[in-house]
Image (cartoon, rainbow, N blue to C red):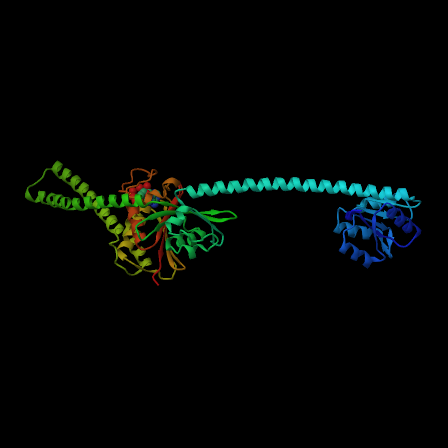
Length: 482
Ligand code: ADP
């Protein structure tokens, strides 16, 4: 007889037990008999019987709870309950416990064997069904795993072939994915990098600054500069439940074009300055060499205003050129609150003339910077000048200076027209003038480009937060002098 047809009998001694043993042995079943609870536990530990017959009371214990305990351990094992009596309550209890069937006297040997065979057959059918289901589910899981593996391979191929550098990090900044461009950019070929802490593998100050400051929401984009002149524009994107992705585009050629354009503008401005000075000089002399009639004087005044406008434009251009070329190296300890005060004093008459409400908020702590005072003053003048220029009469201007950790934060807010979102980054470009200038506010489009150059030459950052119809806030972060 096969091993799985081992029958376990857990019944108190009785004529019925003897009849069961006789009937089952006669039909060639293998039998094991438990005499007490300990013996029963040992038997089920050493072997798993194909079926168990349990008395409704065994060794002084309730047969139903013994059966329930066995079903908890072997949920598919068929259990037949032996009871001295028969009642609808008993049948109900059998059903509730999950027992396969029950037998009770009077019994014949044939009835016993038939009931045991029936229970075994049902258990086998159930076992076969479970095996089939497991096979089916496993096959479907395997197919899903194959699909997700092929998706992964596809995604990896796409990321690898993207020209831009793609770096995916987990929340603790360990590298999850890096494409070929990243390996080439940072000369990492052959280095195992996945799973490593990004700053250990790529000790690049610009990238570290982006990752650290993007986490706090301060930065989203940053330029990554290499000693050999390559420049990449890196963009940080947070990824929910993963970490973050940093993509990097090579913008070296754009930087080179920008440099050539700046060089050209600088040369032209420089060459224009001398003839403009000469024109202004001769215009001043005209009146001295003979009297002019009213029309001539009027034309001369207009000429003078235009030439002065051109001269200030040329001077602004030369300023941008000097700042961008890094010629601005003068540094001394500067108290930024004082510079704001001086600037506001100069603008006082314009503020009054437009009936603007001014609020200044600069706490008690002195805000010292190591900076070029002339340039910082120029930056403040440009920001306050714009706030006054663009805010309609009766509006509000608010200036605040605060310090946080190792940086000074300057904010110039106004209740002016605001700047449309898609133009907010562009207003810092040279000659860019946004579309929502009310009236005909004059300007060269160079003021904010100068602000940006000054801030960057002091290793700071400037940006604008603005809402059309509500106002604008220009924010400057500058590192504090230690
Ligand atoms: P401009 O000489 O035109 O003022 P800027 O470089 O100073 O040049 O500013 C660029 C553009 O940014 C301006 O033309 C204007 O459209 C916009 N702008 C600057 N400051 C403000 C402000 N406070 N409110 C609204 N728009 C502003």
